[in-house]
Length: 154
Image 1 (cartoon, rainbow, N blue to C red):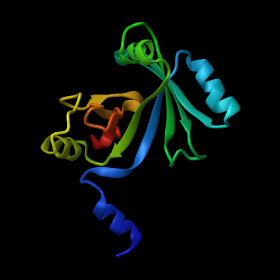
Image 2: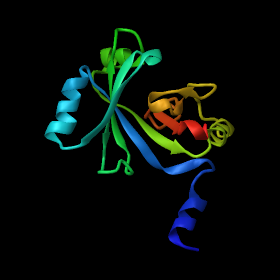
Image 3: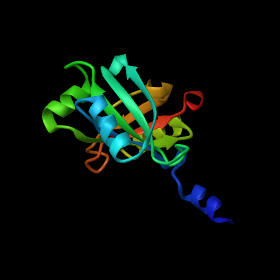
Image 4: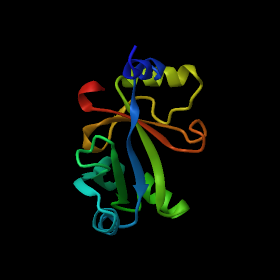
C-alpha cells in the first residue's frame, strides 16, 4: 500500500483528512482583511454575508490555490448571532476549526456513537453554501469544531 492509501485507512469514516478553514472572530471585517491580506500577504478569495447567522465573512487562502485551506474572518452584522455574543464574552480571536467531511452523515453517526455532543441535529447551510455541523467545545477538547461538506456532498 502507498502512503496515501495508508492515510485514508487511518482516517475516521467520512472525513476528508484536512482542515478546511480556521474561523477567527473579528469586530471589523475590513480591519481583519487589512491584517491578514495587506500585512500578512494572504490572498482574499471572497467576502459574503450569511444573514441567518448575522455575520459577514471573508475567506483568505493559505496558499495560492486555497488547497491548504483558508482563514475565515467572521464579523458580526448586528448584536444578534453567535459571533457577536462570542466577541462580547471573549473578545476577538480564534472561534473554531473546521474539518472537511466527505460524508456528513457518516461523521455525525460516528460522533453520536462515540457520545460526542453535536450542537446541530441536522446539517445546516453555512458560508459558501457548505453544509455544516458544530461539535460542542466540551466534546472537542475545549475547541469549537465545525464539520463541513461541499453542498453537493451533503
